[in-house]
Length: 86
Image (cartoon, rainbow, N blue to C red; front, side):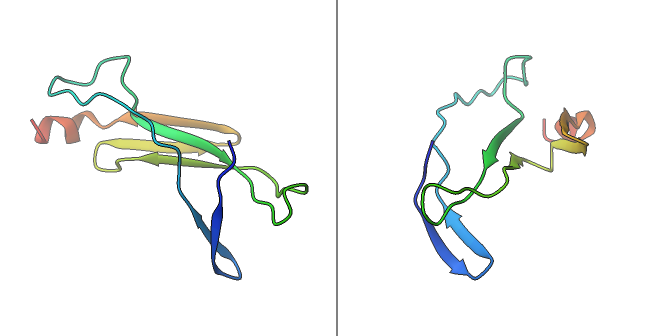
């Protein structure tokens, strides 16, 4: 997917992420629910030459903990946080 970005500063850009339709449930998190969403991101100013790809992970840090080990990203639900919110 390609998105148009806006230059914020010499080292920052912003762009809209794709809209992902998910169902909200009042039930507890099931094994099929997403607890985080990840994107491979690279930028280009000419549409031909791109930067090195980086990974962007979006999650709710109140309920989820994500860690990076080399090229592996692992996200786990924080059970204690989920219990407090019930």
